[in-house]
Image 1: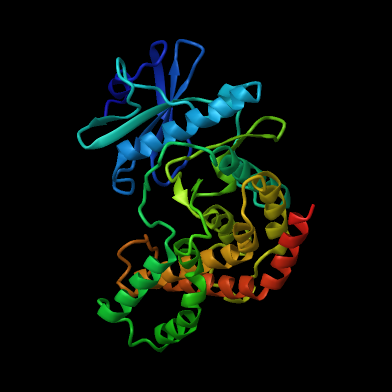
Image 2: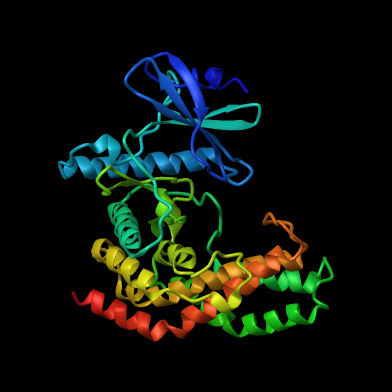
Length: 362
């Protein structure tokens, strides 16, 4: 690939001097463009095997970033260019993506003196909760209709159906394993309880919001003083329940071990992380949260380990066709891990409810 030729299609300022890899993302290929001018840029190849409608994806991102920029301008924020992503259009066009040989590219303006962290502790969890809650709050009045970049991404009813289909087809012949049968018997009794969000939505009491849908500490940029600048990695921004942003963060952050650690006996759900994230989230999201959304945040903390357990388990039964594995039982180990986390979280729901009630009354 001639990356410089790709870059020349975009309306960037200055001549390209250097293009080199940036970061260690698992989905998109990312590069930093250095020019002879004061501005640097970020060039990305969008993984259209995962995000199959790149035009929809970029339209979502542009709508979201422009709306946030208008909000920041209305609030007379300083240093706005470091507090929201800005994408570059093609020369002579309003489009922000370029396709060549089946590969899709985009360029954003590089944000200088900004840092990401992998740290998951109460301090950064509180930062994350506040940042993602504020992100949702700023988008709560977005008028444009966004599409789903990954349809039904966090639809628990769909994931439950996929598990049942995997069990019925048993294409890898793994249902004869007594442990597989035992795990299925543990999971199925919770299926109706965990599909609560879809039922509440059909009843008209649970709205869909514009959510980030990939809430991790390293999806935020910080300045040199440790203050959050902005939320990044917007490919999964789409309509969803607020449970997506709340529960997905806690699924990884509140687990005492990594999601594929086989040491099930060491798995617990960290309540210090839950409380810190909830503090930050409710502080900034309380301006739009309904009682139904707020009261069910403990459910969200249980939903996501359950959903991920179901996904790992279905993939194992199907013969490991979706998730990359490092050894034959990798998905089974992940399944055990997430099942243990789900049970640990569910046991702490009364404590979670007390925390949410206290925060809501402040």
